[in-house]
Length: 221
Image (tube, rainbow, N blue to C red; front, top):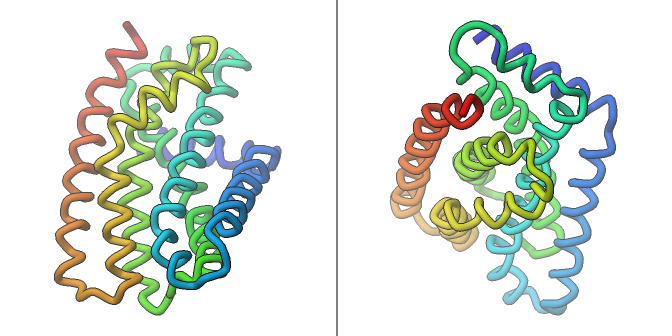
């Protein structure tokens, strides 16, 4: 756990110090949401219906960009091999990178939610259930994205290959997140939305377990 926290905090400090990656993801969120709002027109009803889908598509692409950056610096500086040479299992590298992404993605996801609320009339009265949906959805997506980012870290064109491999696996997470967000926006009872939360939790556990078990094999293979 100490290694996991130290690795995540080191990456977080470097990312905040550089600021270019964070600003690019924020700019991506703002531009994408603004363009989609313009494309759908000024009517409130179509904008509100499209809000959950647009929000989670933006979060999916933003998470992909951040996952690529998580291992890019290790490859450029040649420190990935140093991490792999540390004694013991290699699962801590995966969990450290995943924690780093969660520490960045959750605040960015909240900002994206606020942008979507302003541009798409997305109601925020049920803020805690919306935040719970963000946590479950972002965790499921980032768990797979971190694994594939490590797998492709040393390959050329990893920015192109990562979305191609990733999106086919995370479709259930994105769909469940969209349906849960839609239900909250429409005012459905929590009992009906909890089924989507349970589905997200199952996918999170499956993806986390499989990725943690396979990560050492992939990185050392």
